[in-house]
Image (cartoon, rainbow, N blue to C red; front, top):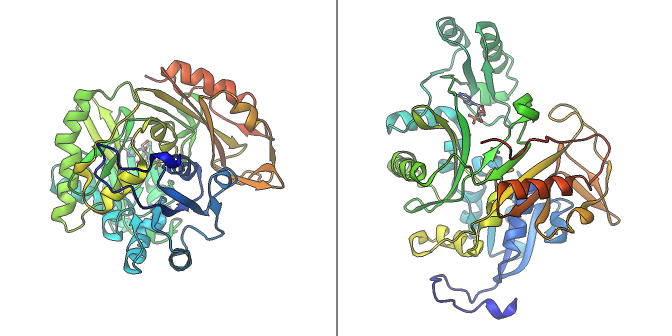
Length: 438
Ligand code: AMP
Ligand code: GLY
């Protein structure tokens, strides 16, 4: 390991400095980030706040909440952290990267102003309209009565969205007027999502396959990562309630090189340029939630960060040192870096607690993780776990992301499910159809 931190021919970023790195967050995405970051020969120490049971084997977990901007800034100063990687949406939207940078600490992730592309649906929809980026037709309302009036003449299904961050629950697909009006009242009058529901977006329902494209960008150069597809519903065949994501595969078979070229020209670069024109240069990972309609790809949503569980199937393909990429983005030198990918496929199956996304139990013992990892193509990323006296216990709704990397989706899928068979905890629930879709 130590032999490698010498300047390599194609790498313009200085490799001489060993770095202390802090990851903010504690889910499956952060475990995948910790796994990838820990492979960098440039890392001398890795911390994660708050981390989880799995991350604990790669990083020192720090008992600070991901939203504790002051605590994390103080910790980074005290420990002389060289780079903080802010992974979740809420600290980004709250301005953690700005706060760290103001304190003289290097931080990876968009500024508060740039993160608004995820933090406010009104902002992102207006941005797309102003700059001609393809998305569903929509109207914005800050008044429940006017919203309901508009719903009377809508065609159904229609989509009602809370403006702000709502833990992934702020989007309601309404089949008729009554459902839509109920959604508007609960967001705008009952404030079920707090201030996130002060404004709502009502938009046209689009049909098509959803593809996630995460991209590295320094606000000038944009490099899309390998595409992936998420499975948002709790049950097989896309039945049941919406969740944070029940599994992913990568690459998407639908998302061809031609489509990527089209998206670069009509969606990705126009978005970067639009953000620059608005004085909100975006540096970090920009996630394009696309839907491939009969009229071509359109943007359903932007996220200002890595996706979860997309990261678990995308980072295993990345050949380039991720710290080199983060530094190039911070320094605005992404164009100088050649980012390389393995030509592999990956499948991630989420093991959830029975009841999720509703009520579920925690503190249940998990067995079989090391047996599952006996296949060298399998990595078990922890999402909601705790390590206590050498044993793992459940600590969240989504518990593990069992990931396999192989030469084909079918092989990766077979290996991931074979590994899943070895893992057990009470009331464990998972989908059996991850990776089957086109
Ligand atoms: P969002 O947070 O905007 O991505 O919405 C969450 C999920 O709701 C998406 O991943 C889609 O599955 C669904 N969705 C959102 N907007 C639409 C739309 N206009 N048409 C169809 N489905 C949508
Ligand atoms: N997998 C969807 C998200 O990260 O928002």
